[in-house]
Amino acid sequence: MNVLGISGSLRSASAARRALERALAGAESAGAQVRLLDLRALDLPLYDEDEARYTPVQRAAVARLQETAAAAGAFIIASPEYHGGMSGVIKNAIDHLAGRHFRGKAAGIVAVAGGRVAPVSTALMLRAVLRQLGAYTIPQQVLLPEAEQLFDTAGNLADAELARRLEDLGAEVVRLARALAHSS
Ligand SMILES: Cc1cc2nc3c(=O)[nH]c(=O)nc-3n(C[C@H](O)[C@H](O)[C@H](O)COP(=O)(O)O)c2cc1C
Image (tube, rainbow, N blue to C red):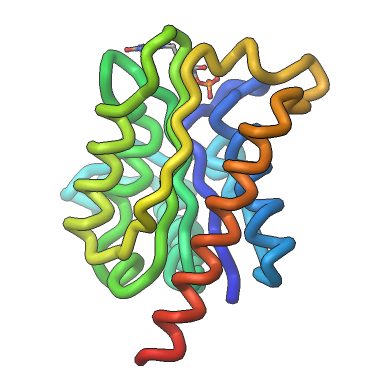
């Protein structure tokens, strides 16, 4: 079982990526192989249905994303809340993918926000998009308001309860992925 994490923030000190790392650690403890796809390194183009317009370098980046997603057994998607919704970075990455990359696979959702209100609408949007693509999202989700204050400069999460919830989410994705693999 391998779990692919994708984060929708390119920022070095990204809370979404740090939270995702913790969720992936939970998936790893549950016995999965984990990988965090670094969208900063991938440098995807904006999705264009006229794919012939991509440069060779852009085409290679899109192919790398699609191959990595096709090989994933399950996903954990993390997004910051931007203007009440998921970031353009994560939506653009998902737009480069299709149902064949997600259908029948387990997925977990993590969302972070700068404000005091939990990023519920971002999580709902991610859930709707993943449902449209045929993924089975687990009911649990971890939503982190005031997220930038949760991590220290080294990226550590001081709140043990939040750390446990993120790890549990990762483990639950693995549990569902295994159940789906056994039932097919
Ligand atoms: C363009 C933009 C829009 C944002 N909109 C919201 C918002 O609607 N609600 C909120 O609570 N925080 C909002 N924020 C704050 C981010 O959610 C917060 O900085 C978060 O930690 C960013 O994720 P990251 O740490 O993974 O980069 C916004 C930030 C940016 C840059």
